[in-house]
Each structure stands twice: as structure tokens, then as C-alpha cells.
View 1 (cartoon, rainbow, N blue to C red):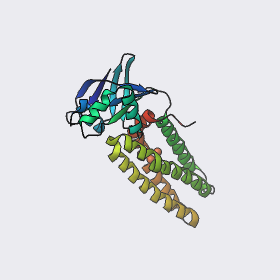
View 2: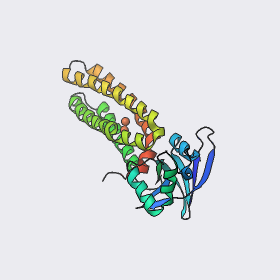
View 3: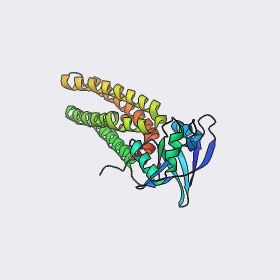
View 4: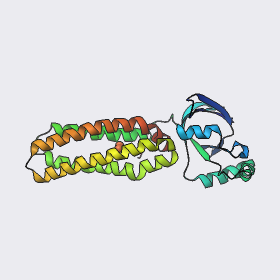
Length: 238
Ligand SMILES: [Fe+2]
Ligand SMILES: [Fe+2]
């Protein structure tokens, strides 16, 4: 048994419920069974709205992100193998019983921290580039821009879709971040054009200033909104 504390989707109030949880290969799993009733339990609605939860176990209390794992069916089969009662709950309702994984947040240097480190590196590169000599500007612009494009492509194609699937509450945030990537890419195209042209260094400087100010707010917003969720899901890459 654990105690799960969620934040009320409508009320914003804390909501604490006792739940049977399973440890499946080191993953902490709960099922929104409501004992087979036709409606999802309140805590399920709450975590769709705000996945940040508190978990109390016999071993201690920790913060966690409640996510919807991509291998839901395999996990549910494991749950049933250990606790056959869940098969009875499933048989009583037409709902597909949601399986929820509680990802601990108190571990060191995870994927979200790594993302913030990449941002720091990009911030520093851009600062150096803008402070540097005009002659070397073109070459350094291209290096910086291709690193930035790789970073945003990785977010758009891998990181954001994974976060959206597991933490539905993040969907509007991820859409906004994706739109900002498009705006950044437009400025990058303009920079590329000016670098190729080599006729308007003042304009190139101005576009780099625009890029820097947009990236400042973009990185800050991204760090505020997705670092915890990424820390919950993945270790930092090696
Ligand atoms: Fe981004
Ligand atoms: Fe980023």
C-alpha cells in the first residue's frame, strides 16, 4: 500500500488516497481500477491535469511524476500475473484500466539536467560568437546554428512526443515550445542567408541579437516546464 497525494484538477486542493502499488522490475506501478467501477477514479483525472504527486511508502516519502507508460499492456499483464484481482476489475468495466507509473524525482543528474546543461553550452557559444571578431563570424555562425538545429530537432521528434504521451498535462506547453522552435528556425534561415551574402554585417549582428533574446526566453521557459518531467523519465545520456 502507498498513499498518493495529487492536486485536485478543479479545486487545486491536495487529495490523498491509499492505493495498492506494485514494484515491477524496479518500476512503481498503480492501476486506476476504482475496483472496476464505470468511472475513472478522481486521482486519475488529477494526474492528467497535473502529474506532480507525492508518494508515501513504508520506506519513505518522495516527489514523483505520474506518467502513462508506452508499454501499458505488457505492464498490465504483469500486474494481473501478480495480483489476479485486477483481471476481475477489468472484466467488470468497458474502461481500459489506466496503468500509471510513478517516477521518482529525487535522483541525481537525469535527462532534464542534461538538457539544461546543453542550453548552458548553447548560451555560452552564442555569447562568445556575438562578442567575437567579425571575420570569423560566418564560420562560427554555421557551427552554432547546426548545433542548435540538432538540439531542436531532437526535441521535436523524440523528446516532446514522448513527454506528451506520458504527461498529457504538458501538451499545451509542448505546442508552445514547438512554435518557438519554428520562430527560431526562421531567424536561423535569415542568418544563413546573410552569412552567404556577406554584404550586410550590421544586419547579421542584428539578427544574432534577435536570436539571442528569443533563445533566452525559450530556454528559460523550457527549463521551467520540462526539466522535472524529463528527470522523471530518463537518465542523462552517457
Ligand atoms: Fe527547445
Ligand atoms: Fe532545449
